[in-house]
Image 1 (cartoon, one colour):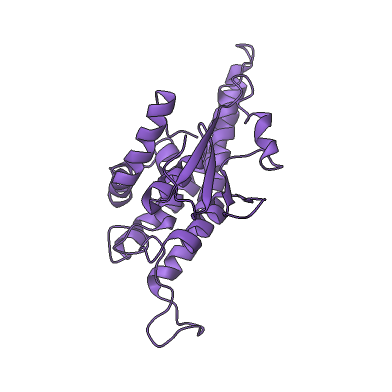
Image 2 (cartoon, one colour):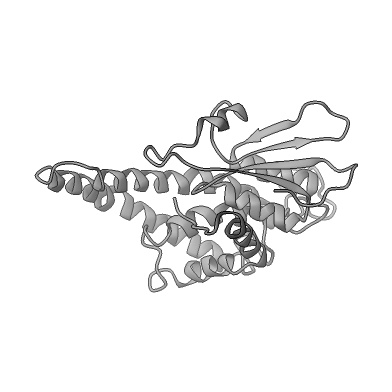
Length: 258
């Protein structure tokens, strides 16, 4: 599926995989209003792995991946990893959009300490989303797999106990630390988003772990009212809804799940 493209514009292609981090790249493309193509992939129903066809696009066989073909060039630029993709797209296609915060304070260009607070937050959360927070989400997914493992009934108390210990002894306290930190960051950002008054690529990157796994990790309105409201605000962003509607149009449904 493709959106209209002028002859002199680069062609962006997103290789989208169900139940993956690729949805936020689709959201960013909608926000940037750039032409793109979408190729859909589905997970193996038994293993839940990405299909082997994705390895023809990138050796790791993961999603998201994008390719960018410049008119007149025979080979596309292929980029993997969510944060790298978002930074690349913003560097080349943001065209002054607030999705990419202004880096330098007036008169302090290219000087150490001359960065704006909004830009510093942006760069930090671009790393935080896939580093500090997503690591715990993946461990939570493993713990859930242990709990739901197809084992004999007399073994199930053991698998349930292991999963429960991972949560109570490791995940629960760490999620509490992460969500308390984000709650505080939102209160001090100077706006409705983590970097300030404007939606940025960092908010889009952070949307997946919070929307897909937040409630399962203990992110409730009662415990974290500011963060919970922020997540709801992201889900109600027009670009987020437009990206979700595009998948519903193609697939018949859309689920933001890990």
